[in-house]
Image (tube, rainbow, N blue to C red; front, side):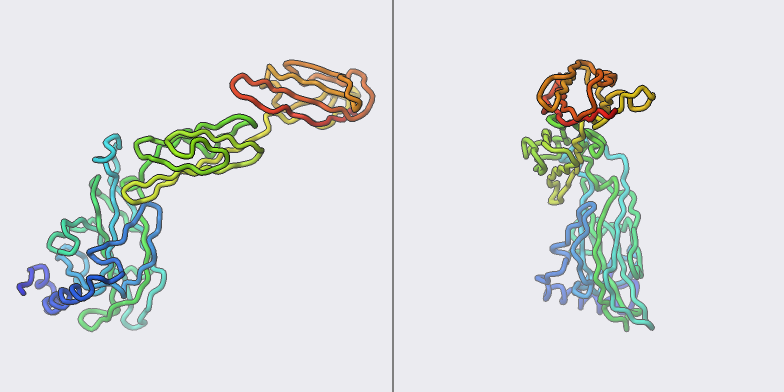
Amino acid sequence: MQLSPLMTEKSPYRAVFAVFASLFMLCFAELSAQDCIDPGLICPLTSTDTVSVSEGVPSGVPDSFCFDDAPNAVFFSFETLDTEQFPSIDYQDSTAFLALTVDSCATDTLAGTGINISVFSAEDLCDPNTYSEPLACNTEQEEGSQIFIDGLEPSTTYYVMVTGILGDDPDGTVSDCAVFLSVSGPAVEYDLAATPATPQNQQIFPGASADLALNPDFGPYEWSGEQVNPTEGSAVAASPQEFGAFTYFAQTEINDCPYREQFLITVVPPVTPFNAFTPNNDGFNDTWEIDRITEWPNAQIIVYSRWGAKVFQATNYRNDWDGDNLPAATYYYVIELNPIDFSTEPITGSVTIVR
């Protein structure tokens, strides 16, 4: 077997290691850990499953890497924004962040321990001769770290090699570290262009619908939530029937990675009638107030006695009813808001005149 120059320059042990690596990889091609044949997929803002580097396989390492050997390499991959599939994407920022978390690590107090990690592209992940110069390369990461990556090209698959060793070559032993990764940043995160732009602040009144929309280029979407129609598509209507906060989710998949958008719709009372007033001309609480009623000029208000007799009626109410010398008692109201562009149920309740 003739060795590549990549395998021979840095260490006298490199050639022996390369032969061993080749044989080892042939024997363990079906290894369940993420090897060069089947790297684990890193999806934006989603952590990978925890993988132990002790289950990795030996791999050759080019001279451009910041570490010499990878006796127990595990491999991952992530995709940058696919401008070929989605030409409308404005790819202006080529940066991303790769977060490495070391879940647990067998340590050696004398030799020390560390995780080595490199980010690169490759024509053939199983052939180190095709590896590009790394965009990021870090050694001896003992716990967790966030690695800044710049210069990422769009529509490109990038690979992450993670390896580790206790002590120094050639006496070091393969480290036993459990790691998981996540990636984020403008070069990898799709903007689904939610409408409205700040959906968490949207409020509606009972009987109304909230229009929710996403960029149709990234669909198809599946929706979930209270009274959402339709449940598939880029634009839906949410029509919750009760007061309170309701969460809606839209999910799609891009290049095998899930993407999710969340909407929060709050159904609020359109008006809030006070439940009592004291018409005694003291300048305080002398009339029946209905909060926000002036925003509903078509509203019709009818007040009844306990016997069902109509005692007051008004349209375009201005919070000016003083009880009309009615006796102190509890009365019952019906408020019809009569909005123009949607329907609402009548608002009913009681109001007490206190004298």
